[in-house]
Image: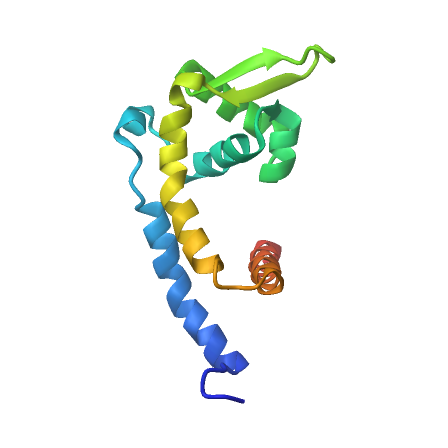
Length: 150
């Protein structure tokens, strides 16, 4: 083992000390001034990220990706639509489905809110190989799944 390697105990110790700081910084990331009056929370960030990166989508698809009940997403979408953050429209191919998108006049502000984390992840991930990135993403996902089992 080289001096740069971590054994399991030291890796876990390091992550237990690091993760609370990371979460704290993410929670303190400033909401852009143009969004400050909307009482947004970190839980909204994931919803906006899916819509920003993947485009408009049905409520049920958002619920699946966010791993919450469709009713929960419907409530969030209703609240954010009333505030002018999101737009809802009927799906042209299936009128029972509602398609959700970021309101065009809020898209730049949402992109600005996501930008700091996007930049930080790009800087952190750029030196890694694609295989190392996959390992990191899979490991973080496994950690989250294990926490949710408890």
